[in-house]
Amino acid sequence: MEDLCSLFTSRRWRLSPPSPGLAEALAARLGCSLALARVLEGRKGGKPEDLLEGGPEQFNPPWSFAPMERAVERLLLARERGERLFIHGDFDVDGISGTALLYLGLRQAGFQGLKVELEDRARGHGLNPEVVKRVIAEGFKLLITVDSGTSDPDYVAQLEEAGVNVIVTDHHQPLPQLPPATAILNPRLESCAYPNKALAGVGVTFQLLRGLYERLGMAEQARAFLDLVMLGTVADLVPLVADGQAENKALVAEGLRLLAAGGGQLGLRTLVEKVGLDPARLTAGEVGYIVAPKVNAANRVGDPRVAFLLLTTESRQRADYLAEILLDYNRDRQVAQDDLLYQAEELIRAGAADPARDKIIILEGKYWNPGIIGLVASDLVERYYRPAILISRGERESRASGRSIPEFDLIASLERFSHLLLRHGGHQMAAGFSITNQNIPPLREGLFSYARERLADLDGPTSKIDALLAPEEIGLGLYKEIQRLAPFGMGNPEPRFLLPRARLASVELVGKGGNHLKCRAQAGGSELECIGFDMGGYARRLWELGEVGLVFKLGRDEWLGQVKVQLELEDFVPAC
Image (cartoon, rainbow, N blue to C red; front, top):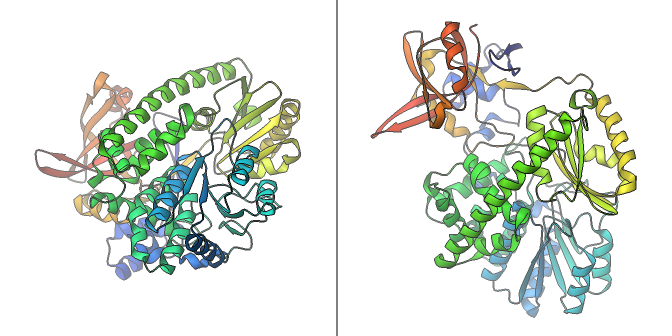
């Protein structure tokens, strides 16, 4: 194991030495280059073959959920009786995409009288008394939750006692008391044998639809909604390779292929085009960083129903109109996020939080926008590499959202102090809760103590380098091979490489204001084109260093019909 320190920042990189002969044997077995084999060797997640391109054969059977038979039977009975169905979905991208999928899928299967309601941030996640009363009063006999419901035992009990059957589709960590639903589809239940414990909420809903469609003899038609599965899976940051199999990765890959082939939902294609992207060449990274935030802006500063209507519309004119509203929402969201981040940084500078001492950042402000606090918590995690919780303080009760780092299980920390909370939910890296104001001080002190104990030795992040490359290994051939690992995302990051020794033959500033760095690197008789985004400030010092080591991702540059490989620089380290 070798650690390398950045020449310009406090960032640290770790390169694991290869096991003798393992990469060579892997390359021979898979028929791939030694460079790709070295990447595969260092990645966790079961068989190396699972990390390469996959398809529907990697989808788990829907019947792996033990209650699936019961859920599908109840749906078929509702269809036979002509019953009206109530669909209750969460307000984030995972919930909205899953709700759109279920609505469109049930409608295509011949269900009538579908009523859809999305939660909103004012009421919080999950079912609520108003919804329960309305469902009973309006005579519904079946309610399906999307991306929620596991933490609502009391509300589900009220519905079932009133003769309303409930099918829960969810993926959040269950509480000790489970709801008495007709069927609970949640891979995180201890009793659930479903192999993929990291399936997104939209993935659970997709499996329900697959089970229904199999029984109706229309199994192949479920593939028409894989773009929605892809959107929710990427947005919810679930691992694309988890638990020794790659179902999430295959779901995302198939959704991208559907869009590339001209399929998928009109509204999603319209939004992709509105933000300047090509559906035929869309990547998971672009979905995560560009597309999904526009959809999510609806629940943060606007109305989540706008996003649902966009994902389900069949009118191009209406899709254009709704997509423009989302773009307006996103601009408002960015302004609000920047303003709240400034307030948070001011509080830290004033001593309201000490990330170095406390190992966790906990800040509160009166009536902070609940739709923005999670985003700002993410910004603080990125800047300080500490778990961060922001609390929006109300008159008597407050709401909070937190984000974390791999070394700190956020939902486990909240479980430890659940006696102080009114409600909480989420997972290891992101969670939220509501709390009475009088319980905020003891919670704060408890979390400080808990974090100091578990993060005592934490300094900062160490990023992984997947493999060392020789100059002669770098080329378009390797770039194309690396794409066999795509789509990249949480749990399956784009590989980073180290070129241990290079001399920069030219360095120039490009982009607006000279923010970016463009250079040519000479190594071992090869000359390589490099681009370093937001690295313009390093240019002067680079000339003084002579030889350096380059940490980079492999990119592709196309100009006037010519295609060549390009090193997308991540950092500079001492030549080694």
